[in-house]
Image 1 (cartoon, rainbow, N blue to C red):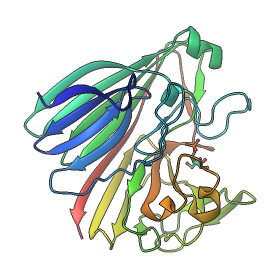
Image 2: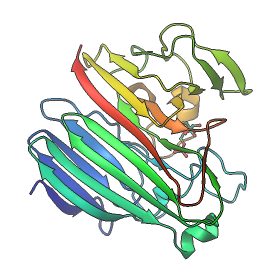
Image 3: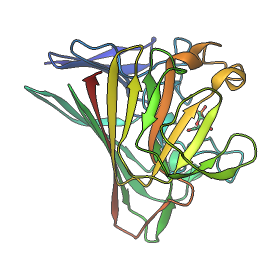
Image 4: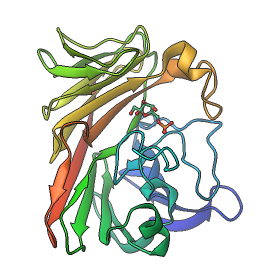
Length: 284
Ligand code: TA6
């Protein structure tokens, strides 16, 4: 079997996937994909070397699951990006096939979650890990009342040099620029990174990350998402993040598949919503 259990640090359970098509590691806290490396490729996801692995603390890197809200909560006592990434999930199923492995994780409402967010829910994350990657976050509203959620697969992507990359597919898209005064703008041409970037693009289009230094292109397709978030902290913001080395901003960019801002999801009682992203690498 290509899947076995280990510990990232003592007492911090992870799954290690070693399949002919790809290797990966997943923390059970947050059903957090830490690493995905297709066979013959450099790692695709960025994971901070100074990330914190402790119960209830977010992990800097990989694919944090932001749910049931994206960004800061209305109540400042509540954690940014929701609580799903801070709680242990259960491994509901695992399967191995010739092209990879499929893992399904589940988080169900509990007294601990109800204290943070007073709604009954079931949340599942399905990971299809192989030469390509597909994550699907499925929310089911178990409450007798409608709920409103925002969410994101907050994906940290490794790049050779963030100042040399370009991101296409967002041309002419409106976006909310949250660096400094929050301002609505429109993207002109490909997106490049030469300063702090923290933008919510109103877009469901596929995007392509072109990385000349690593000589590869990564296509990201989004399903069930109307928002693509692009973030790089650049120099000054990086110095405020204790779980990120000061120059790490040169080695990653976040391209996040989201429902955020004005793009929230309203779920009727018993309804289900899927947010999915599919990553495919090509040599450039
Ligand atoms: O997705 C962009 C963002 O909302 C940034 O504003 C920055 O806060 C980033 O997420 C990281 O958030 P975190 O809570 O993981 O430090």
